[in-house]
Image 1: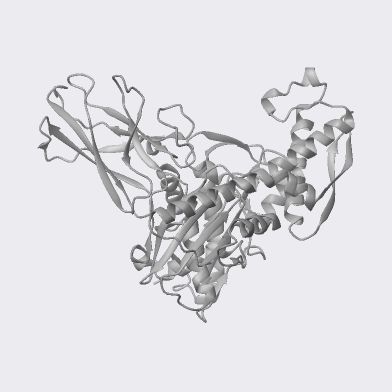
Image 2: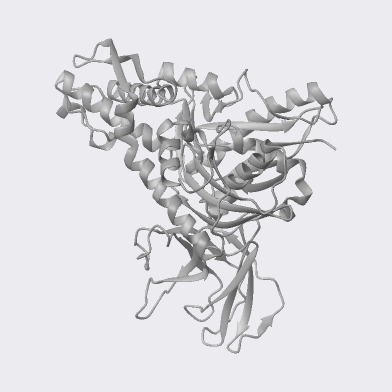
Length: 527
């Protein structure tokens, strides 16, 4: 039997935890650090760097041989072009990039474990990998597939807030019966909030909320925009924020220098944000290209007070989502919160604890011990009990899952199949008609609706309704009559939030007329 680990695969950073030979929970170090920047750099197709080395090389060279912040796009089938340092052009899906990154992490971690436990016990067999609570089926499935392709076949996914709640109880060192924990998880790419109740050894999710596209990167963007504006103002430039708005002839400025400046200011903004968690004011020198195109040193500075003014709207938005989730829990009969737990790297920002404490003054104190490693430690606790995870956790669906009406007066109207807040696993069915006689292939789009944040969303095109994936059924018998048969699809949401489907051919009375299993594929698996 080999070893198991917990992986917090984050947008900005990745952390891996495990139990050592003395049965103590530890965070593994990669290249001397427990915090592994989620950055990858290609010297060549085979020679790959990740983590701090990749980040430093990318920051120094400012070229297209590396990439970070790829996790939020892991379900995106588009390909990104990467030109290795040796000049080879690679076209990779974001899932492929994640696979390469995780493969390097797993190889490095396994080497350390083999040295500690030996060649048999130290080999990695199982992993619990955390995902944002707001991730959909396509993103969860892509994450699981990337981990398997990276070398670990036995993989279970757990929502990040649940892992944080598990780690909190482990850190406390004592069992608190029926304790209710509010987890405020502010990561690099997403914000999640969950209210989780421990009952008879099971972590049951009572309510869930968050913002899928709100994370630490949004805060960095606010700082970047200020620095970019100040730079333009100093040199009398009007360089745009977006690449597609830039024109060399119009601005009389090199596109290459423009891009390198943007990378420099983004990295500088990120450094300022991180450093201001420790001090009141920060100053840093950047190497940039001035108005005449020559390289020069440029000083950026920011105070914590200025930072707070820039990011307060985003922090307020997370607090509002938190209060909404508390109300949802009350509606489900849970009105008491015993502990507020901060997780995710962005929770290190002092304004976060200040605003959360201010809003939740009637609840217990905020706990935020080692927020950057908390989630991976919780994943490791669950990984140690790998076979019993389904009994230890009780998650719920985070958004409405459904399809849209394809004809009639309600054309393109969202039709809920599985509502948000349903205990997982769960399933429900929906019937579809053929468009013509003899049709042998049917494609069914399925969507998610974030009705909590967008309560007015009702039709495709409305903000808050997003296409998740397309179900492709291409094994229908020949000579079917569209007026005589229907296709019944049962959407089966698994414990980890991924979807499986059962497809049956039925008559007009709903009776199954073919015992033969209808084959299907998700379009994302075909791309």
